[in-house]
Length: 331
Image 1: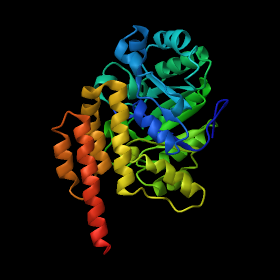
Image 2 (image 1 turned 90 degrees about the horizontal axis):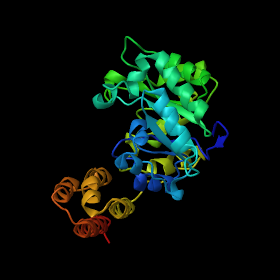
Image 3 (image 1 turned 120 degrees about the horizontal axis):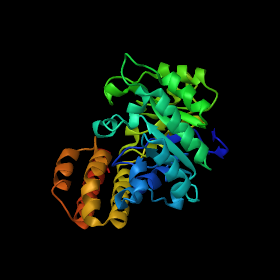
């Protein structure tokens, strides 16, 4: 898949999710075969004012590249300034993505994220300013529209193309749906038919087969996976296997638990143990979801603050699962 002058090795993207797609998770997804990682969304205003917490979100590791840095904001001058003075001279960032899809109240109340879809003229100014200023390809993430009475994803995609965007990712829900209901994949097809730049489909890809079906049904050039990768970075490996005509390879519980432990240790090394353990509780719950007695393990993890103790608990859990599997198979 080609985005601007940039070649992505396959059709798979990791969709950005605040508090989830941090550096450690992106590295793991890259190892599992994702073509393009995308950072958590970063405030252009925060970068403009040199906010330390904001700047920490822009940290990139060579192991995750190619990577797209996603920025949000609604002031064209500030976004242009940040691109020229902060992002253009960074060789570790490959693509800049503009967020026009985030539905969070604290984002839209400032006119950012999906609120930009309510103001196509301002959306155009933002995209044009960033695309003109950037020496890297600029992409845009949108939704179907603000609500069912203002479905204008096709219009915004056309504006994005005319304003210099190299591709557009469409989350096939309106803002007022947040993440509920069913994603309207047919709408992704409408956007694909309306523009010549690559269109990436997003929404309700939870199995490898979902990704293939979305591409077949909509003609989209690639897929972006968010919630479907939570606790399941193997989804990228499995989709690539399907695209190559192979049977998708399901991870064993042991591989899942080993990856969860490694993920936790990476986060603790990057952010310190106190923050790392707190942030990993939800991630570990996603990894073990559906395994035997996983609720009990999750509840124990939620009371723990020492990563070594969590690792010991998970290794003990692994041992129990292995013994049970052996006894069931008559060994």
